[in-house]
Length: 153
Ligand code: 4NP
Image 1 (cartoon, helix red, strand yellow):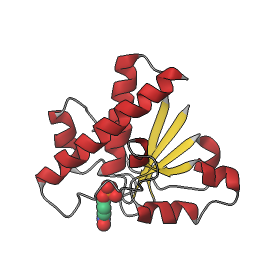
Image 2: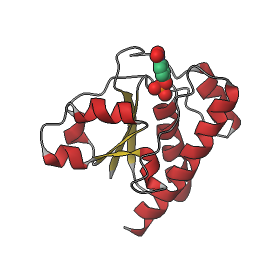
Image 3: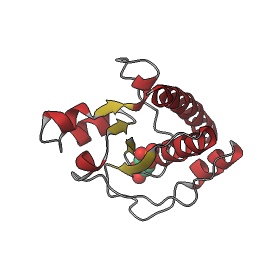
C-alpha cells in the first residue's frame, strides 16, 4: 500500500501526516509506503515549518528529515491512495487527474474518521502554536484509524 499526503505548501500539514503515519506503522509493524507533497511550488526543497517540526517532536515524532516537493501527475501512478488536507487541495489535485482510476484514489484525509463528511484539516500556517497541536491531534487520530483498517486487510 502506497499512500501520499497532500497539502498546499508541504511544510505544515502533509509532512506531519507523512511522519506520523510512518512512525505509527513502524511501531505496529505494518508495511506501508508513505510520502507527502504540496500542490504549490512555494516551498520546494525546504524543511518543514519550524513550528510543525517542534510540535511533532514534542509529540514524539521527528519530521526534520523531510523536504518539500510539488505534486505531479506521475503521483497518480505511483500511489494507491492520495489524501488531501482540504477542499482547495482536492480541487487542485483533481484538476490534474485524467481518468476515473486517478480520481478514485483521491479523498479528503479526515474522511478516514468520518466518511463523506469532507472536513478539512485546518491550515495552521497563519495562526499560533495551538493550531499546530490541533492539527497534530486530528492527524494522529486519522492515522491510527487508517492503520487499523490496513492491518485488517
Ligand atoms: P501547508 O501550510 O499547506 O499545511 O504546508 C501552508 C504552508 C505555506 C503556505 C500556506 C499554507 N504559504 O502560503 O506559503
